[in-house]
Length: 199
Image (cartoon, rainbow, N blue to C red; front, side):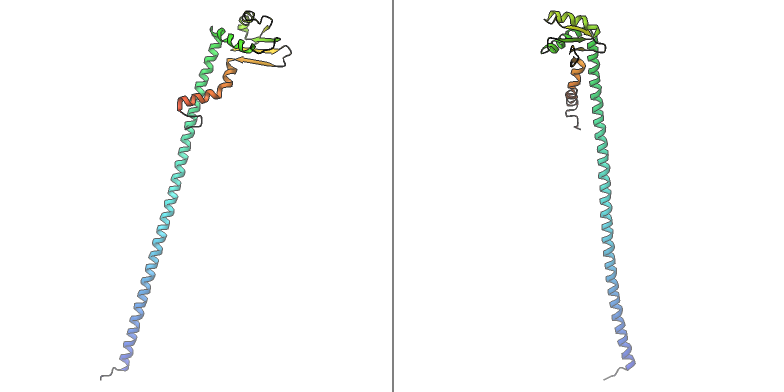
């Protein structure tokens, strides 16, 4: 049997231990590298997900802001068109009150005013129509009532008691004002198929 000199044996053991340590270190280094790459991938994926979520949130906020602005423009446009239509109606009522056919309307307004009125009221009339009101009152059983022209009264008539404790006005303008909200809704529905707040 051949004996290996001690120095060679020791050198061989050192070489084997060195190889084992190098292999172990290489395995640990490979594991550390794999762990680092996994952490890097995870951080990369998390960063991408966070960036994607932030971009989506910004996009959603921008979209909501644009939609809100568009909605406000639409509502403003609807209101503007409706205001113009109601202004046109007012102009036409004013033209009617200034025209020759107004006396037929005034007859109806007087009849409504006097329907349940006390017998001692004074009829207030536009100065241009005071004579017509007097004639109408006489012809319709109200000859006992006095007529007073009232500057600034247009498009109808009013009644008040002698002590001026109450006044009831029946003009085209007051009737329009009482119905303005309903007329606005009517215009919006007719033009846009919805109510004032509908988009």
